[in-house]
Length: 276
Image: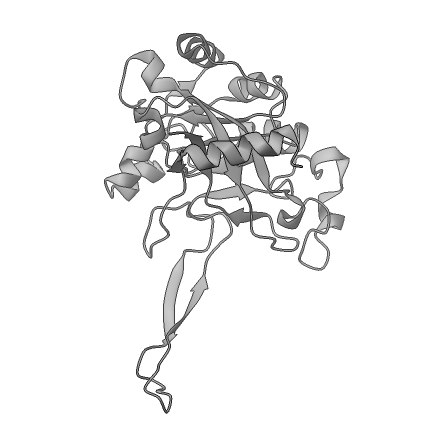
């Protein structure tokens, strides 16, 4: 006999579920950080290049990309501070051989957890935050209160800034924000979320940071707080618009990284699952 939890899950699936796809479609030329190798897709074999005796044919693909391009998760090996990774691991020693046995992407377990969306512009009465705007602790607290949300130990917390609209509109330069800046969670905001005991956190921006105009990715304090000091995974370049429009602030979060041995990150396709 199934245990009660399994029975509840099967019953929910049978009665209907609504699934929100939080991952971006990977396309050549999509907006990305200039610090990472670009996504490229080629077809070395096309239909007709080789035809079988029965008339059948097949095509295949080759893809190259950085592991921090498109919607992706940062492994704990991604960022160091003063030569140390999370838990005091020596970063230089850990990368000998060109891969991270400890803290690599292959160590990130699949996530099937309670998810919470913090729709910051929705709570502040605007459609999208301004370029370079800080998401403060007060902003996060206001959003939590207005939504009636609760952040629990082990949750995955997703922070919407509305900046993902620029990705949707094909405005890659603005989405990258190298000149104008990008709104995001500050160092204090990251510390506040980490204090809740969360497992992972994500955003709709190219980096989980407040990027000030002209500053680029020179300083990444939220990454330091989350990855190095607290061991909390970061998910970036998420599509949170439909989830926010549907006002789904609590859901089942499902995500599984690719098991790239020793890598600093992995492309992902996160899902938010709610009752239909």
